[in-house]
Length: 244
Image (cartoon, rainbow, N blue to C red; front, side, top):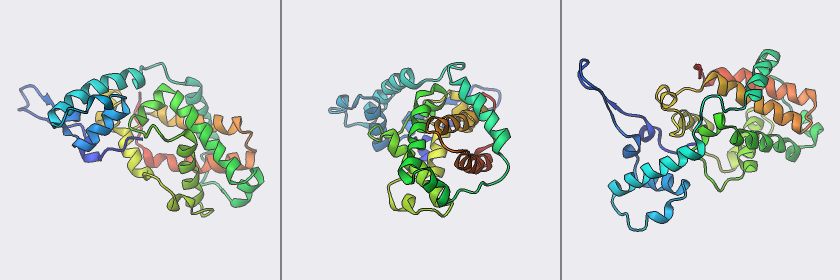
């Protein structure tokens, strides 16, 4: 997920009188030096920073880095995983009936913690392969494997349901902060950054990828229903959602 301070990442508009033009300020120029260096490193241009002590030079390099990242992650409408969107729509209608009853017994009957965590590893593999969803993770730490991303989400769900305290005892960035950063991730289309909301298609694709990840791991209906009911019940807190 994007790990830049929300205030720094905010897309700034300097408004002129209503009858005159509006000046759009480059959001990269609002980042501090540390964040600029991280952005450049993530784009694979860290070797160019050796002789750039001034922030102005880093901003110029960051603009070049953004071009590289745009090519790597830019989402073009119609290139997302439409099967995941359709699956997510079905999931919302089938399972949005309550908070679910996720229990340690359900997890253990599936094979315990490790088997449970493999669901979320598969989920993030699907998410990062989907152009519609990958643009929400432009600032993610490249050294983290999908299994670690999955462990964080999986352990968060377990802790929220009173099953394990692994999440609070292990490294994580915090999902509320990560979601706010994702909404303004610079890899998203500009209009999506400005309204700082997830789209309805991203909402459904998220649920669809989770459903497909469960099918890939042959999750039994009891655990599947408990997880999807829980996730569907919590989804509105990340809205309102907008059309793509």
